[in-house]
Every structure is written in C-alpha cells, then in structure tokens.
Image 1 (cartoon, one colour):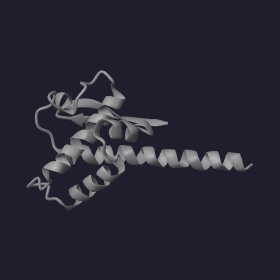
Image 2 (image 1 turned 180 degrees about the vertical axis):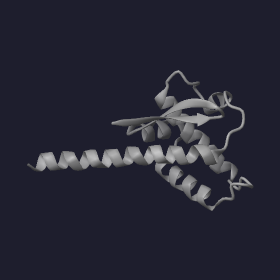
Image 3 (image 1 turned 60 degrees about the vertical axis):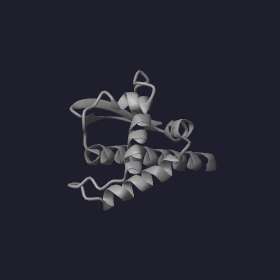
Image 4 (image 1 turned 180 degrees about the horizontal axis):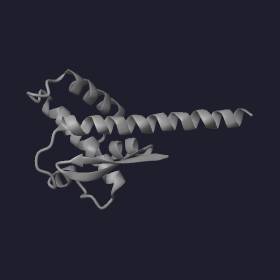
Length: 125
C-alpha cells in the first residue's frame, strides 16, 4: 500500500509518496534510518521558534533528504540528487511542508498497521 499527496512547495504542487519502500530508499541513498530522522525532525520542529528558524543545519538537511526521497518516490522523473531537486525552488518554509510530510507518513504507517492486523485475523481463521 502507498499513499500519495500533493503538497504546495514554493507555489508549486509537488507530489509526495509514502510507502513501505521509503525507508529502504532512504537507507540506500543516505545510509540513515528514516524512522530516527523523522522522530528527530518532529522533536526539533516542536521545540524550535518558527519566527527565528531555530533549526540546526543538520535538521534542515534531514528534512531536505526526507522530502526529496518522498518526492522522487512519487515522481521518478524528479532530479537524481537532493541538490538538483532543491534547485527548482526558491525559499520555502520547512514549517509549512514538514507537518504535511509527517502527516502523510503517519497515514502510511496507520494503513500498514491496519493491513497487518487484518491479515493476521484472516490467517487465524
């Protein structure tokens, strides 16, 4: 199962996709764990001051990487690197995009969890 959502980034509607493939793509591309990185991002955004953009550079890079993987997964014609992908935008707020990406990821996790529950019920019959 996968979930796809268009999110406005710098005035453009960009498709993003969440599925069970995303953690593997993220790990293969960045050699990092997307679950840990999303958790860190959520915590950093919750604790930062939106007016002063109090996020660390490392957090911004994590956000860019997550957004890139989810966008590339939705539309394979997107550029082949995060840097090239980001070139299509001027400046945009992480605070407007990240919550939507986290929501998309959460919906995917919920859907995956429900599918596993239903499958185990069917096997138990």
